[in-house]
Length: 406
Image (cartoon, rainbow, N blue to C red):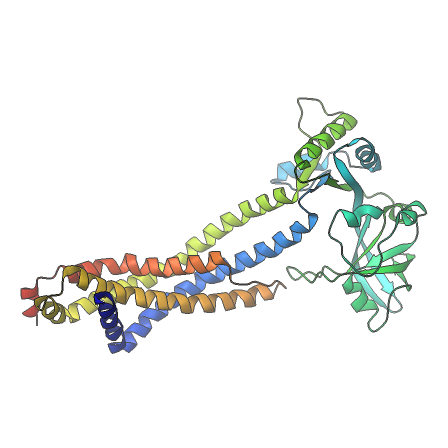
């Protein structure tokens, strides 16, 4: 009951100084807006990227000549490697006992045209018929190319939703013929819409049989990358080791030399992503925290003024039986109410601002537990850290001197 009574006194004290309390609240709001905007935006972008990477599946990994480089020297070192080719894919398909499915694939860009409409830099992805069983390509209508299409180099394509909307508005594209580069292809399917990311359209693509791509476009200079699905998640590491041994033997890599190819899983991508965003998160939040420190200093200054103004009140309360801890709690409650209220308002505004900013690069975010916990912790921590000194000063006042204060 005493605690509720002290809380009520703190609330009334804040109400009695509306302008001063509002300005103090505003300082905390600005600080929290900057912090929450950064936390929410980074969380939103990271989660969207994680969802995209997660489409590979937990038992899937990739092999390529070069995937990720960490420096200029690393890039020039990897660019000299031999390309991954169909012989490598065939070796893995035939010799890897722990690999359930293997699909070589490649990418290119070309103009995609139907009638007078066209997409200038459409994306081409070419792979074998079982690619759809390894990575998460969802067919919304029609079908993916088959083993027979692979064998006969059929001029067929599955198109992305962006190609459908741009070139076939109001028309069923299945069975229609479009041009990819200088060649004609029959549309056999439409992929489920992916939506844009980082402002880049992801649905302007076509998928064709790898054999057809090789006949029409030839081998790319960067070669192929191979997508492999292990027998199970538990056997993923062993499957990767088996593939590593097969490729090192085929490519003549000595036992004391490092791999001349890259192998990546979804988890490795996510780990790398987390390590990169962790640095940005710490740096950006550290810079934005300056504003919350300034807000905290304002809170301390206001509370010191409040203690000076209410010295006689403190003396009277002590004279009629209030203990030190009661005075301490009263001023701490005032500080916490101000910073927590400002924190909640700042969290809402910061999240809405982050949603607007992230929406400009075509991503969605939702309030995460991390952002909410961080926001509440920062706002309440500010109240405690910057409110404790004024509260202690008020609690230590001598009641006799306080009563005689003018």
